[in-house]
Image (cartoon, rainbow, N blue to C red; front, side):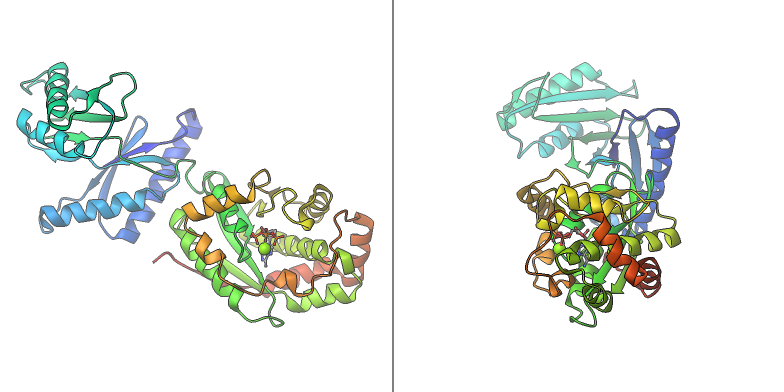
Length: 392
Ligand code: ATP
Ligand code: MG
């Protein structure tokens, strides 16, 4: 199988690091599938060979290959996954395979052949002409060599011939781990899982931190966070979810007179807790699903007041996204249905009727001083329960 790599712009040491981390991630993902395979690095592609399936038989081999191909589509750093058809070294077998691969194609096509073994009876030019003519006659497609809708690749190797098309789209982006580690503030909502996904795809290994309203609410939001992390785990593997019961701290903020500032004060305490946890996990960034102006707590003034709460950078990949764009992405990565399940969000629990849209730092600092909020954040981080939701 051919795994085409993204970010071709990377050069030198970055490129080597990209390949090394990606190979390790591919091996980890293959362990989930439980099929042994061998990896070889080539220019811009990784060749993955499923271990010979003599005991498995051809049908078993094809099933294993399909399973691996599906799995590889979720590994960030891989742009496309092609599963070549392996055929004997005869022109007839090559034609038959090419016809099979194009039977559902529409529009235009091109054949690109490469002959590594010069003993093959046809030159690469002749393969292109012959296979092209047969596809044209059988399926009524027309040839377009400069911008084809479908390309059929034929690679004549020493022992066999590989025939394949562009294959299936992967996630693209960078291999997880290449950009370091971050802590995602993960609600049960729509935005934060999408934010996590976007950062994993830029190479960040993500840890997840969820605040439940317990003991003032039930555990429903925890189930949602767990299910969301389990779904997202297929993009990175080995995910860890930390759950902090936040109800008492929210009450304390409320009694210290936060009032209209309660939402921003709560969010700041969440971030400070995230920072304490990040220190423990050697993570160097916090990630949230904030989108500018989406709700009253996400005005520019309030976002600035959140940045003031911590030293670590807060990454907000969705800051410029519309809700409809976020929902489309959530649907694509299959988190939307879970996010839309009902739960009691800890933030709406004690929410004031009016939310301050222009939080003043002086006021926030005054409330926090009364509570020794930095100690409180450390305690909350220590009280976190850890889960390891793994992708089934
Ligand atoms: P989401 O859909 O991600 O919940 P939202 O539009 O509902 O986002 P808010 O609820 O205001 O927006 O939250 C903004 C961000 O704050 C979230 O994207 C998330 O990163 C963080 N956050 C909010 N509530 C929680 C929570 N209970 N636990 C952890 N993080 C939270
Ligand atoms: Mg929310």
